[in-house]
Length: 525
Picture (cartoon, rainbow, N blue to C red):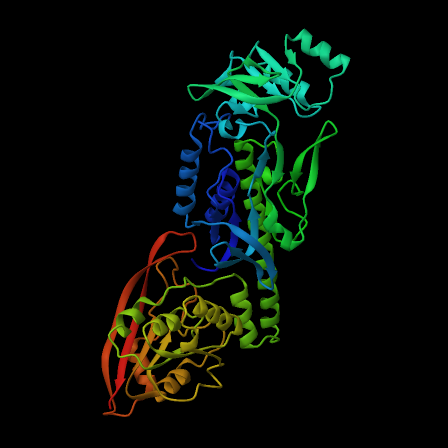
């Protein structure tokens, strides 16, 4: 699992997957971390979800996961224990000891239902112990329904369930005594009231057949309860985000995480959606809230990236920015710029080489250096950007090769690493800023030890979807590189000089191609 994302979504229910789908389609790098404990898992189906009426919860979530991963999103099973702010965003610690980072967080962890203390209720929860008539009323229509009263809202609850059955019994259990007006309403709607505490359930054939109260059994086929709903928000405590109590008719029904209509919380960079912030929200509403939050997060990221790009452009245009700051700004535009995979030509050309000392020029975020280190090389990895080097060093720790890589910051046009190497690799040293490529490659050749290899990878032209955007730009061929190196005759041999075409997707995710070239030469012993 990679450790940096644009957005991490904590919770893989309807809200989380909808938010992740929105962000993945916006070409954001998204990770969903889901504990695999959906609130509606016991239910037979999801209801009042237009177009998906009655679909089993696990099927809805499986379809959602396929849609998210189909657009490049990542999903893992795990439990987030803590969250903390870093200089670049947020770091999450999982129960398995792993850590992941992102620029933004979307928390869709839902809520926990606290059931009345009645033996047997929890075991039948979501089956014939129910909470929402809009979600389950149709399935128990015209049956004998009981309502366990635990708050002043019990009368309203009983009258609501009366819409689905004319046989409703209200068990007062622990609720306050009903007022005269409430009693009149219940009598007018033929709702029977039973005094006393509910002490248990009677089951027949694995289903509720009665409710035990006052030493007797009142026949019932379904039981409605009002739970206390508590937002799953523990991971947000480390960010200073507190919950608030939610009231209905002056009675506290649970706790939630306050947020604006788009899901933004009081902590910049953190959004919430679904039941964690809206306790009575149904599945279809949670999904819609996830979409709103995902769009808001994407807009927030765009605004930040635009501010950075404008600042870089202004400074660069005015000659106020050094190459180091230019590339640092380039890398800080996103939590991760490159794929995290080594260059395919490096893998092809270096796999059979005997490991020794390697020099990776313009290492970026370190994928090539880490690949070499994993295969036994001692690597010096250089780049002008300290941001890129720090990212590479962090990934090397994850790959457990940190002790095999020396990360050095160099502006290769003015400083160059000391020593001689068995492999010197220079991959795509094309730059948006001024870069003396020929000078650097001559220094690279001079750093190759006798018997060592110089590997130069370069672009041979614009990608297929760009039609000569900058007329007159010259992409060096392998022969151009050889000529520029001006190597002493008889001291080197050419092992490979090749142009090749590879697949590459454009900025909209559409497939395309790109022509690159590879030059592999060896200094004779």
